Length: 328
Image (tube, rainbow, N blue to C red):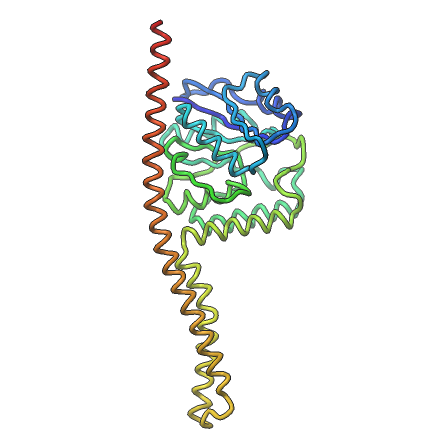
């Protein structure tokens, strides 16, 4: 059983070594532990720090591509190296490395495919009261959208089984945390959470410039994921508003028509027809989007099998090379 711990990095030279030193070297049930960093266009000596420490794998981007792209690149690199379990953590040492053993335990026991680390949000001193409330609100919305019971959706401390990692697709460039939970929930993956500890803050978050920006981007991410996985419901709810308003205005016109002859209320009839047609067309768009979503699921299945075939071939070649080197 091989575990690869990946760390997305952007100018993390000051804190990366601290985070690496906190990671476990041995875990019961794991035969091999390797470390991987994703250098997301760092302009300091982050890569040099990683190499000097002894990180096994380094994925580098020439320029910053965002946390989500870095996360997916890390999963791809870890799968290519034969990882059975992939753990994602942060370079600022926000999460306690000792809890990785607890994080991967449900996967080792066959109880889950995705495990999210639940931070003690209310007890985290460097979280402002507003941020704590927004974290709880965001997690609540994600639970409803994904039909899961994950209490800390924005947590980046998480573990994926090999099979779950091959199913992951992130289209958002902002962050992967919310979208992957919605995806896992909608695809009926076994997903759970475990309580974890956090370390004192070493630096402020770089993911967003302001709280307003964080809320806006998070809500757009959730809305996009909801539209991708439940398009018919989403467009039906949107289309129902103008349709029902138009229906109400149409009923009002009919009342006046049968009581007073409808004189002077032709505008109401035109408005009612316009709104009802708008609502109906929105539902038709939802039907088309639902067909596209069904096709996307087929494409995701094809992509999964292609990924599995590719990674299995790579792993077999790597094993052959290792066997040849050993025999020589």
